[in-house]
Image 1 (tube, rainbow, N blue to C red):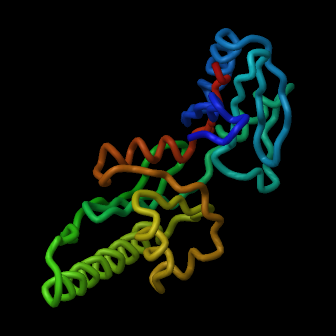
Image 2 (image 1 turned 180 degrees about the vertical axis):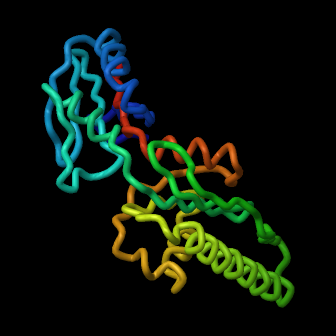
Length: 223
């Protein structure tokens, strides 16, 4: 039962979109056509658009300015200009069903490695069998993490990696990044996490484009 005074209250629905720099102006035009005149406000490193019907869109660049701001007559143009800059990213996607590591520039994969290493699913067994299974599963996950870290270090070597983009399973990605093989990249800024299914070549290509795109979180007006 809802508390008094909150009957019928609903949170505004939200959704996330990734838009490349060349498509940003068209996306904003369509958003305005659907929701009415827009008010623009700078927020941290991003831009918030608020429409007359209450819809909002928070636009975040794929990377920080780092002394290289975008150029343009307004916030939208400057954001698109910033996102169109070619910066070198080290992409690490890892899940129990596979992994992919790559160097990404301009939304394209320039060097990569994909693969898989078997990690068992959870077991319903109990007692000592469950404990043995848990140890075996943990050992398999550790081996996966170690392999991915070594592959990433090899693929990144020789490239001027500016940012690291983790993705897939958050916990496994954190473990990969903590491995000694990647200690040399600890100074690199980590960009927002990418939620992906089990990585393969197609998923890697999509993640590469998303990593270099503008993130747009849209909050629809409450009906």
